[in-house]
Amino acid sequence: MSVAVGAVLVWQLRWRLFCDRYLLVLMWLGAALAPPILLDLTLGTYLTGVERYAIAGLPAAMLCVGIAVSTLPRALTIGCVALILVAWMGPTRSILRNRFPAEPTAQIASILNQNHRDGDLLIVHSIPSGLLALSRSLDPSLPMLSWVGPLGRRSVPEDMIALAGGVRRIVLVTYHQVRDPVPEAAWLREHSAGNEAVSSGISRIQYFPIGSAAER
Image (cartoon, rainbow, N blue to C red):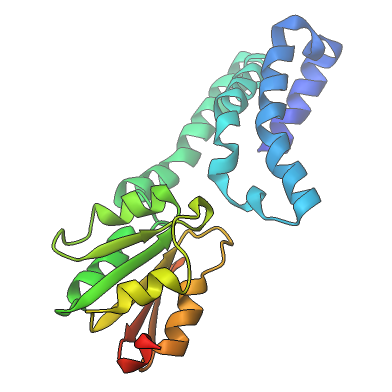
């Protein structure tokens, strides 16, 4: 569809596409789309695979579609609008059924709530928005500690030694850590009495029974 819209714009407007009337919309669209593409090319990341990083360009893209459709004959304009509405029906139903299919916070919280034991400590290693999203669905009685690596507020082994004292099991959840290292996981694997892991979408839940080894 993007190729078709671009072809219609170029064919119908030609050089008029770069006049003041349309140039602002094109610059807006380019400013929203260029950063993820350039970062992927320079850093080897995959930002273009995550739709929300280009969401700022959605209004401009919709304006481009509107401009392209408005240049067509009336019959084709009506047909294109009808086709767009039909194409939106499937995704709209999917969104209404499951608003956040790639963000399984409810499923993660359900697993944590069901498997909680007395003496557990929950450590959530995530970005701030991930912590907020997960905490909304968690049982408020669960002892939870946030670990946001880039903030530099936690350290290994000092914090882990202090946290391990007085708990029977540490539950480590990694969710949206955005390539941030998870040093507490390595420490727990070395100082716990075992390790059980459960994966749910983009998250990973690890259970570490804490024994006398945590005191070393």
